[in-house]
Image (cartoon, rainbow, N blue to C red; front, side, top):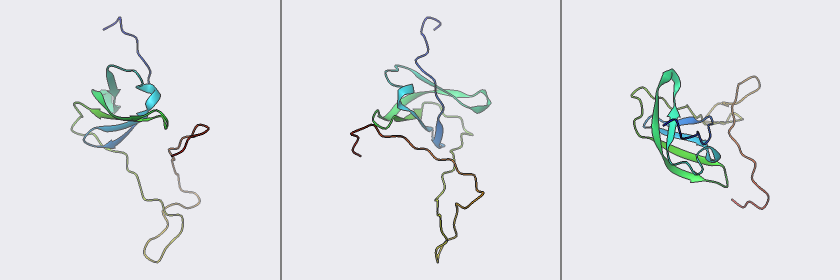
Length: 108
């Protein structure tokens, strides 16, 4: 409805092709309805599957995930070659890192 303002918007990452999406908690905090916009003009309403305000992370579950939904590939990062596996992170390799700054007094 036009009379309802957007609560917040943020970027996210598809974790699983069944419709699990990682987003910042502050983007869904207090929301009664969540709609996830996906590439290609697709999208779906979602339930808040899990949420943690301390780490500012939430996992959404798409109610109607598109059939062609693909998860972001998360790799095993190895800095050094071992006897059984080669290094996957080395100078010149593009690496994206997801991290958060814990608040003062935060104890994991």
